[in-house]
Length: 329
Image (cartoon, rainbow, N blue to C red; front, side, top):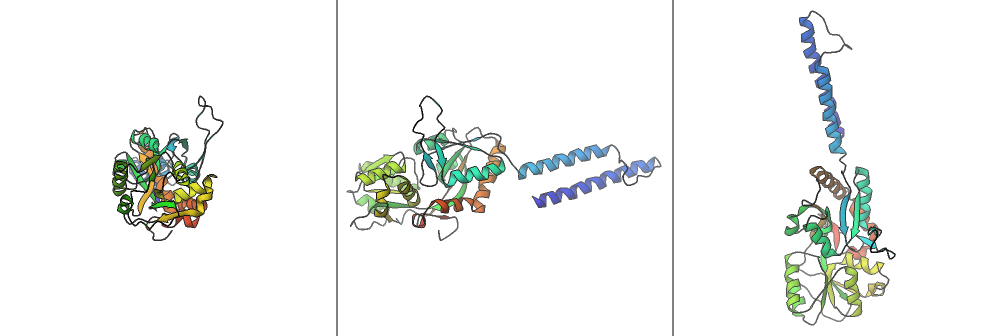
């Protein structure tokens, strides 16, 4: 911003010099001399107006604001998005009294306020969250891994790197090393969150599990955790940070915390995760630019990573979540 203002100062001086020079020529023709502090003729108002407009334009870019509240449907996602449901809510009344917090929610509220952008969060199942984004009914999709079908519906701003792992209750079962091992162990029931996606290999495995009648799809990680705790399912696949966060926050799941077993699978690599800005919703070009600028700032400043570290325990982050372009959590 300082560089831009410096450029504007030079431009203003240039405008004043050019106008004064032009006026001097006119005044010389009339035999009068222009001195310092004297009005320099008709060009001055135009130069002043042009300079003001230019300066205003630069200030607008540097302090871009959102023209309206940004709609963000979210689902519970460990400590990234925490939702406390309003138990007293009347279905016929206001549906926006749920309480929202978590690393993403906190950072968007804090950093957005500085830039004049506000966010309206609503609670929906993960699968519906995805459908709303694809249909242009949501301005943002978060947190989200980068996928080709999502790229068609919006612009992706990477924030962190994540890696899905296989999670189960500790047992004497031999370790599994890849998704094919999981498919080969047909005795294992698998519970996954509907709408989660960790790439092509994950989707292929999901479809094979369906064919083998071994797949249980649930609306959120809490429901998956309850299936594991009850012995209805044997394993799940998601980032351990999400699952550990859910277990720590749900009193019914807390007893299983020290019994969890995490297995890194070779064919589930580190991938980018972040925020999608919709190109199908009613967002205008200026709002999209403002959000892009805001999210890039959040990613580069480390604000999101700092928030994640405040919420998550180091053991939950290991082999699961890390800053982008890093080898260590």
